[in-house]
Image 1 (spheres, rainbow, N blue to C red):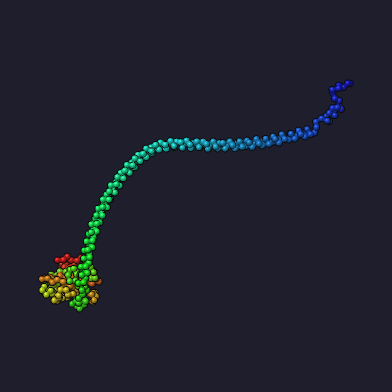
Image 2 (cartoon, rainbow, N blue to C red; image 1 turned 30 degrees about the vertical axis):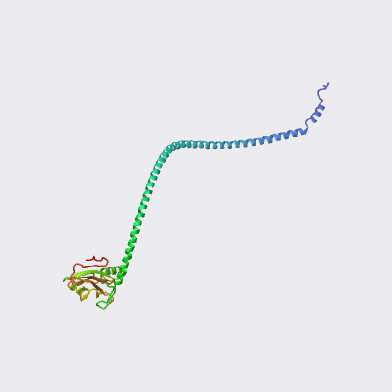
Length: 309
């Protein structure tokens, strides 16, 4: 049997198979496969991560979309409010214009009123200055009168003196007339009751006592009277004008008797005053009803001087 020259023999086939694909190719092929596997795993991992990131991004997009919707809603509300405000501002501007016009009118009225008030104040100031000048002139004259009165008072004080009373007790300052009595009242050392007692059979009240005038000698300026006090009657006989007539009442100090001074003896009357101590001066007992019946008072206390007859 003839063998074709193009067909290898079994031996050649064996030699060919044994000397066929090199090992390094097989190894390279294995490395390529391993790389493909690694790449596939890495690609899957990357794809998975990308899918997760995409999902998160979608969630964030949803959130942003919701926020955008809310913002759009707020913008719409603000736009509506702005339109309303714009309308109100239009009205407010009109009102402001009216208020401004009114304020300007008030300002002009106030300015006119201020000008009138300033003119009135100037006139009042001028009148006051004139009045003050007149008052200053009057005060100057009054000051002179006061100085003259002061001089008169000093002279009056010089006339006041003390005297020994009919009970041999030194009296207080003695008034010789009503001017002297006014000075004593100003001093306020004692209570003073001015009187004019008529010659009658009925006693007349003088302050806390009663007096009955029984005898008068106008030429000699003498008189006789009876004083009713503390249920007692005290006769003071032939006393002289200007003489302190003294007597005591219950509770009074022995160094401060009551004093009656007559500075005018008339035809049928005497005029003078009763001086009592400040302590209990008005608290002396009233005269006995039987000995001295109460009549119309003929004296006024120091706090309300009697008018001159």
